[in-house]
Length: 379
Image (cartoon, rainbow, N blue to C red):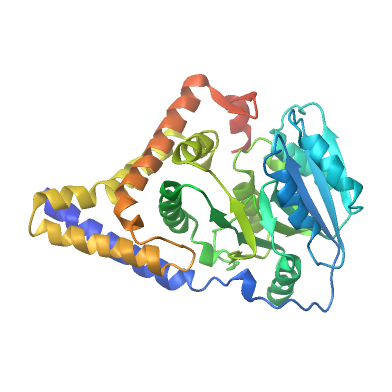
């Protein structure tokens, strides 16, 4: 009887989530569909924090230099790089007068390195609009025109563009698709434009914000110790009354993320616990939910035989519809098979990151240690 109740609840849950996401993600537009022609072009500062990015920074920065926007300034903040990043930046800057390079030699007390670097970039700027982005993000030439047109059309203070994530690992791509579904469920991105909604969003690849709204939100100084600075910046802008929205960045903004599943797991270890505000109970509840909803239903019900197997097949059908009908996902035909495995990986990340952070009493970020007591000051 317990298994039957569980099976029915899971079927209802997956059908509901499928309908919710398929309908609502279609409310989100693509940046590529925005017009290029501009009536006015406010000044823009593109601010990039860089640390040991010799493998990616040249191609990414060259794409920023090729932007066709009439008035923009590039501020690159080199945060204590120890590889060839500094030499690469200097070589590019020689032929690009719009680039200003700021070098940070020592980590400021009370700051995470990236947050401090972005703040220093802001302090060096005077432009009305600030685009905070990462050192491995590539742009098509008309990105800023299209983004500014959408901002003017919707009268926004903050625009987020979700990048097209690429990887050489097919396993990681399958994992990323399930990760996207989880984020959609948690963040409800189609509601961020509603001033009455508590939902908000931010992404490190493309946080485009009006200077006055950024300052009203407290700047990065208010989130100086948050590993999830992009999400927290979006949250603070929305809480401060800023008008916010997002677009899909397919074909316009791209990010070659992790090259393997192990890189993805290790990469999320340092900031996953912060998403739950370092509250162990909340993190374990999220991990349990991932196990019950994503991992357990299909294998358990298939093993139980008829009629449970039919419910499992219906849930698999929901997975298929979500992966191939969700506007923000690009899935291969076999990705639906890995939904339980991807859920297991996400649960593992949450559990291990939480236990590890609690056990060592903090996190290591860019080779510096931050205690939990210090991190919890900005909950």
